[in-house]
Amino acid sequence: MIEADAPEPPLDMPPVAQLHEVCARERFLLEGAHGNLWFEYRSATLFVTFDNLATLDTPYPRMPWMHDRVKLLGASLLGVQSFRKDWFRQPTTPAQIAGLVEQGFFERFERIIFVGASMGAFAALNFAPLVQGAWVLAFSPQSTMNQRIAPFEKRFRYSVKRSDWSEPQFLDAATAVPHIAKVAMFYDPLEDEDKRHAARLAGPNVQMIPCLGSSHQAIRLVIKCDALPRMMDEFAQTGRLGQAFFKNMRARTQVRSWRRTIVDKLAKRNHPKLLLRACDFMLVEKHYGFAQAARRQVLQDHPELDVKQSFLDRDAVSDDSLE
Figure 1 (cartoon, one colour):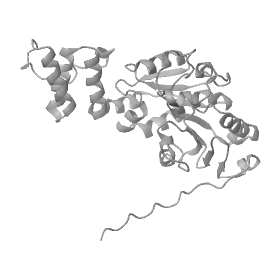
Figure 2: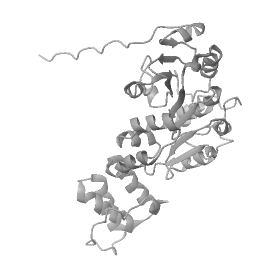
Figure 3: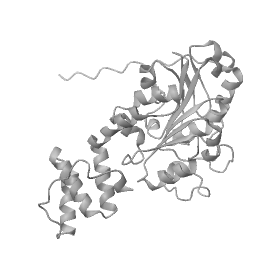
């Protein structure tokens, strides 16, 4: 007899609070028409995390994005949750954050870091100026999805069509960035839309961190390199990422998804010799079906290439060669 899976334990949601009660609570859920704020106090460092498109694939109620990772750091969490894939283009979230400011909620924290990826990064950049002294970690951010301002952005059409991109308030994160003291922005320069958004968001207060080969998932590459916890702690302490982080990110060359992206990009950019050498290098270490297929195709398209060439030296495929 096959036993049924044990039911998952009920979600330990904080008690619902009214706005005037937030400063007296160690945990609370502030409810809204378009989304909720989930708060847990642990220390004087606060991470304000925002939902993204992937988060919203899990039906509500759910834990805030990055909940467990922030908990492991021993930091406080304010999870900004949305009920729809709307890029927070609704009145509830900014009003909730502004309400916390009016109540003096943020005054108990020594450091406040807004964090988001994609849709969440757009919101983190947009709303950070509401809180004095807040810094931002933005992964693969969009500057706006307004087609007049960013006509190069053609992704996520269904979700964009269902959200409002006419209301001028919080329409363009590029107008918010100059009002944020410190920003670390992660993007893939090989992803055309992300590269263009990053260019619109650049500034003297922004540390630009190209994550070559991450596609639109820079946060996942950082996680797979086991660089996220130390990165979050370092940024919370200094507002900037240094050599320790970039050393950790060298592990990206061993990540399967990174390798596949590099192979795909080389094929699309018509670099047959470099593609062949990259595939040879990867196949020495592991049997990758995508590398074998790409190698067969490049030799079919370019039979003049020497199939007996020596395998690629580890430093031969560099980030610079793909710019």
